[in-house]
Image 1 (cartoon, rainbow, N blue to C red):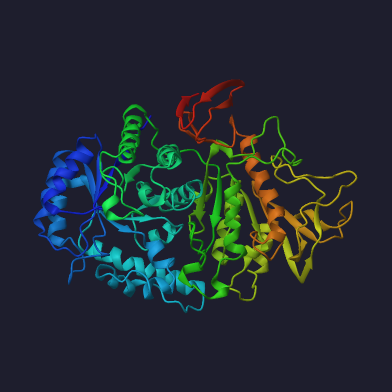
Image 2: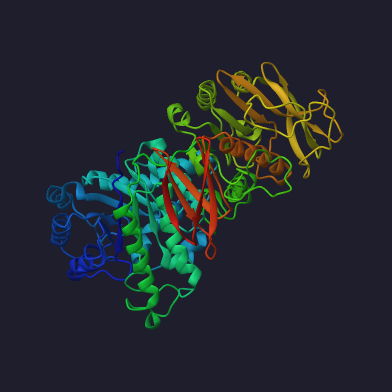
Length: 626
């Protein structure tokens, strides 16, 4: 079994950066602690000689420590475009070889796509940050194509400076869902700043982007002092750091970096009250780091990442940032049509994954309740620009968020289904317009017919009716609440929504809008399926994105059934509470994590006709080879 190279270490520079003391910091905080990685953040505009970088490179390589520089080009010394001059980069590469990983661009998505005008006018005006204003997006773009392009150009400016200097890799640390656009700008390795947002969602995002771009590795960065909670002595905050590390490991992260906390803590505090290294809070940071290193030293995690069979698709020009505290697409604050609406709100559906369907949900089927997670416990968020070969690794592709459809992507999705995949989207995802609040323009009828087996009649219908399923899914593993004989009250009515009326050709209308006890074929089809090659394409005919409350309940029911179907028909079934997170690697190595802060849980694993029960203590990570 091939084993991963996993990097684990600390960030040096959050609480001061004295070049004459950096080697001592490296020794104390990394080498003596048994870590194999550091990221160095030079002081803000404080100029020092290039010889220091060469000395650090030599010392790190001699001690077999991998390293990178943070903010090499974003906050350079006065009059320079970067901290590292090309000659210095060349010398560091010569001295350190593969131990020198390159430069890390910090927070591009947060900085250049999630900051309101007030941030630049009334916010931080310190000298070292002023030049950043030259790189922010404007606030007056016409369409999503422009904002997408300008964001990529903005990040590319920093990437290009690094590439010209000969930097071996350019990485990005980002707390948003913009890893895909950072990769488009030339980033080689995406790193998630964990915790500002939901790691259950953002880790699948960065992992999916890494797969789509064939990145060498992907990593996680823990700014826990600032974002793990504002009360430093709170017990749950201290436990949260431990869970964040274990969860990232279970999910396949190959790089772990602690921003701060192990040496001192000062966030949200007057300087004179900051915690020093002997404070119990800092001791806990070091305890968690040692615990993570013990796991890395004793566990052999297979190299190719966890198995994933379900992916959610992030469409063309999607501007969902993925973190809390931001509600405008691509930085276009105070323009109502650019504020988050039903497209971005549809990503909230992922907040429900990891929790089982309620006990009274009569559409939850099976011998066991597998509704809490998809097959093998994991899902990815995959950008639409991924190749068909990458997409074809997933059994189910489910669209959430904004999408501007193109003929090229319709052909790619049709090929995905032809190869055996099951695709789900709404009619809203067929829109070719990239204008926020613009008029709906459906992709060509020929491509819709090729994929979904239906033709738009030109009629729209707005209704507050419910949904009645008359036929079973063409995917026999998917179990809709179907009424083949007799009828039942319609489901999922939640307000008015607009549907497009499609006439079927090779497709089949499965569910209908209805306010009666029994669906009729003359009713408005609201769910159409089409068999293409070995797979199935499913279209919900709403022109509203699934974040719209009126369509959300219906779309969620179909999504959750696909999630359940993937797990219900999986060769390995893992049954546990909502606090369980799990993954499965090559050789059927199963990782189990109890995310409950207080209580133990029991987990049942069913494989090859046998069952075994595993008990996990609070916060416990355990691996089992089946």
